Amino acid sequence: MWKRYNLPDRRDLLLIRSGTSFLLAGRVLSRFPLFLETMDSETVLGLSPDDCVVVSAPEGGSPYAAAMLIELVRSHQTPLIILPKGHPGSKRLRYIVSAGDTIRVSCAVERGTHPEQDILCGSDGLSGMTIRGAEGGIEVFAGGDTIEVSVFRTPKDRQGDSLPVSYGIGPG
Image (cartoon, rainbow, N blue to C red; front, top):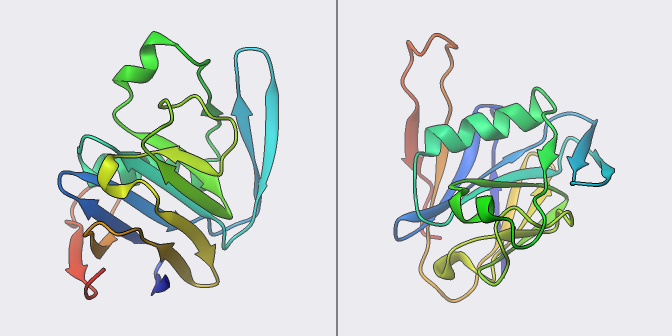
């Protein structure tokens, strides 16, 4: 069953946790071309304001760092680098980013190696989940595992004077 989460403020991101691992998802907010760079080619993915950008942290980490990656993509149109399968660096990727209208999470894919932006490496607890952008928010189709969902608000002040806040929005 799909569940909708409204994200009315551009600083609001959806934080989805299972154990120590998490996904952080936000709306793209503007129309722009996102460049996907592989070792031997470049692909352009057209993004729309209500598409989503999702960061996966399969082994946990900082939601603040994940929020910075979302901002690099949606505010600065930073290209995504796709590693070839078997690349030794993929094991060290703590955060993995994907963008598009719909993103499926799988624990059976190698980190950072999928130019198809509809699939994202995630932990066992988040595998099988699907996230899609929606007008004014994000929709989530969760599998059977217990997840915790909250809205993560990014800092208002670029100098770091305002601390981010997180507040619950009900059971996942």
